[in-house]
Picture 1 (cartoon, rainbow, N blue to C red):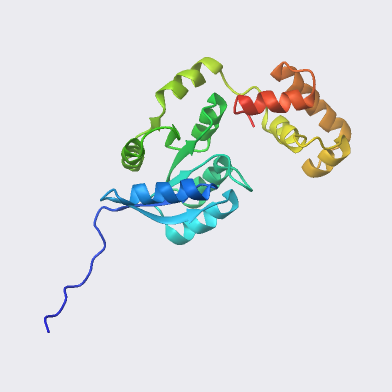
Picture 2: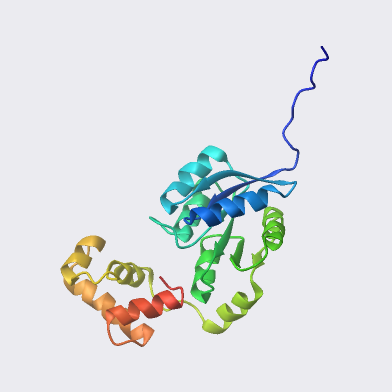
Length: 213
């Protein structure tokens, strides 16, 4: 019997972690990316809470993250990945082409930001480019972000507005963010003023539409 030569991993293969909560889309993306000769999806997660732990196990070269994930957002996961696995390049892939999201993605160290309606071939090219250290940003979204200006909300205002998004009482919001009710009212009032809205629920909607939350 002829001895079989030892099997070696594909040199230069790009290992990818895929975070997407829609199972059918996640499976399709994994299948299509797996057809690329130099790309392997080595980890798949459906929630934002699972991203960092799975990445620390699989050690991917690139993390492909949706923003709107159950649990924590893809942007929050990206921020922690930058701290705990800095060699992993983050590419944000989202349905929502909101200028504020792009700015926040860049703030947390993402190398790319693409919307989901593009062809998978472009996604494969983007993965290779971010691994090479390039920035890859959807051009229409980049133009919109420049014209939209920066996020007017402070981190504390964002926290309070997010905590109030489900219609919770001032007391409940205060408990969630560990502030006094009076301070919560002040932050909500500031957020309403900055978003040009009439109440906190309108402020939540406006902030989400702009990608500020």
